[in-house]
Length: 131
Image (cartoon, rainbow, N blue to C red; front, side, top):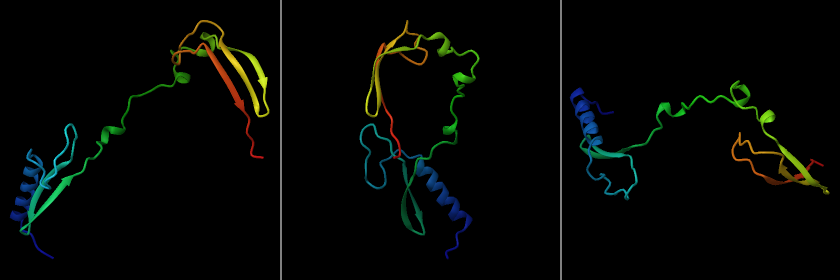
């Protein structure tokens, strides 16, 4: 196994750092297309052999930190859709071999608590069993 001196290690580290901050063309001769992003490419000479390397992208540690979201059921200030919104009225209910279907019509003025209320819907229910 080869032994390295501190001077050699420092020169190698210095080469790595300076090549990472370089804005020249990649050492592998490949160029990035317009608007694309590539990892930093650099070269280092180890034991007289030039070595090309690239630094892979890593996700920052803070990437898993998101906004604190309070669900409506736990928020005392949230609108209570069950008491504020009119719901739907079912009509044209038809029993089918697998379940039933019905036409649903908004039973009052839209409240849009969970997004835009749809005035007319068709509900199809198919009951499935394991048998």
